Amino acid sequence: MNTLKQLIITACILLLSAISVTHAQIKAIGQLDMGYPERIALSIPKEFTYRNTPMLTLYDDTEERNLLIYDDDINLVKTINMGQVKTFNYQLILQDEEREIDSIKAVEQPLYGQTTYTVWLVNQENLDPTFDESQLIITKEANGDSLIRINSENPNDYFHHNFFGKKYHRVYYRCFKGQVVTCLITYTIDYTEWHITGTHVENRQSELRRLKLCNINLNNGDGRANYYFEASQTLFNDDEAFEYIIPKYTLATEGFDDYYSVTEDPIYGEQSIVTQRSTVISEKSKLALAGFQVVSSNGTIVKELNFEEEFTANANPSCIYIISIGEKTYLAFDGQKNGKSQTMFYRINRKTADIKKVKMAPARLTAFPTVANHSENITVELDKDSKAHEITIINSMGQLTKRIPLLKGQKRVTFPAQGLASGLNIIHAAGDKTSSCKIIIR
Image (cartoon, rainbow, N blue to C red; front, side, top):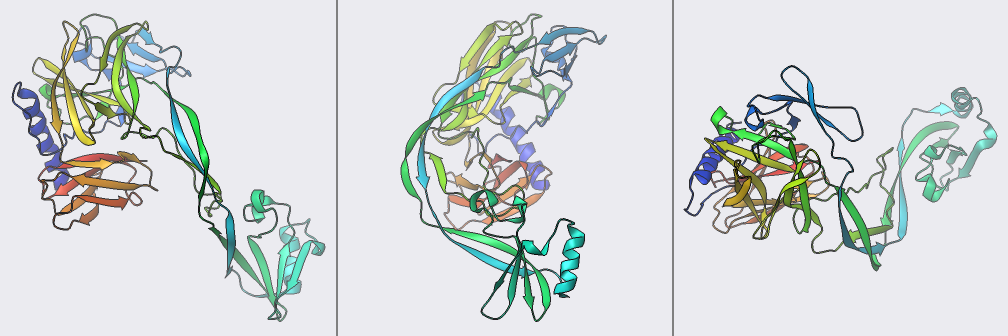
């Protein structure tokens, strides 16, 4: 827990230093950790309302996810509706492969004590009134045992019934010297090697939903982002109209996979049958934030920003961090530039509605993918000047969950995400002061 507190305090000091310097080159020894807002606030912060009074925000129960805005008398003053949902449409090239089932191995596990064949028949009839001895399939083995299988019509009684039919029973009964034992059968599948069969192009799309606005007002003593809101009046200008933010996506080498894969049987947790697969081979296949649009509640685009210098922000979680210091307001984005983690700062002139890039803070520790499933591997890379001797991982509760020692001079380590806590995790390079980065495990 002390390590997490130290990270937070040092990150805030770095953030203040980064923004207060206007001309000097930024020097940072770690990625700026601005927190991970998991909950929506019930208000628009007062500093972003026209009358400097917070406004209550709620959702109504519609498919359009209307945002309802109320004043201090709980009067509905505005309903913001995005109208028709817009999408980012893109194409990916996938390589197709196939393999064949080579063999299936069965492992028998006895479950229950012995009983006589006659008692066993009575038990079966009690369990299933429709049971009849004619349903039994009895085979003799070389050692003299009899294997008894029930010719059931229930697909769940068979291993992958939709693929093999009634070939592999999940349960059978072993009879020897007049005694019957119930046995559970588990199966494993061996395959031939994968072979390429071709490629194909796949059309995909991702919804362009309102970006989260994550408020960090240092004038109020805020040190991290805890909540997010979704609309404002005076963040980008100084009038009574409401605006919200829509992302502009692009494809990049690092970012977010907007799709999932299922590899396990959802009922029994058994090995799935996978004889075909398609793997994305497009060089740029990840969703990343390339900029954003400021949209008025009437649907008009009032401001548009495109990132510069090959910088792409993380697309998930899709947050815009708002940093308030004195009379100045900044936007901060966690992202990538040339494969390195960066934090980009833009200053907002709320009177002229101008948005100008002012700083970029480099990091010495990077991890990818930044959003991963438990079945994936995480790779951590350190800067060439790093002197870290250990990688530690801290979950969202501040608990140390993993330690990975580093050899002298080692700058790269890969480890499985399995076992890490779902949600936000902070990766810290021990021995490198505040060198850290964030990943999300889903």
